[in-house]
Length: 65
Image 1 (tube, rainbow, N blue to C red):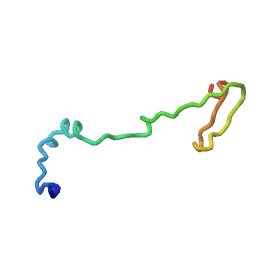
Image 2 (cartoon, rainbow, N blue to C red; image 1 turned 45 degrees about the vertical axis):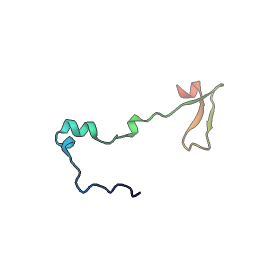
Image 3 (cartoon, one colour; image 1 turned 90 degrees about the vertical axis):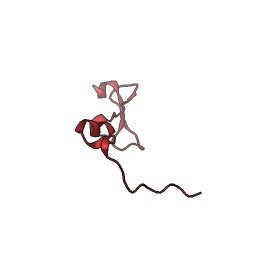
Image 4 (cartoon, rainbow, N blue to C red; image 1 turned 135 degrees about the horizontal axis):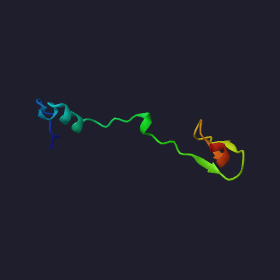
């Protein structure tokens, strides 16, 4: 059994208006939508880098504030 061939003609009627184009558009992801977790340690004045996550550290509460 052969897989179906890609169609020669692709109807684009769903992309005629800006509203419909936005509805069927691919997802856009920006850095503003990402969340950076905070790793809190008990103690005071503590900052311990996390080796597997460059630029991220475990911090005590007083260091976070």
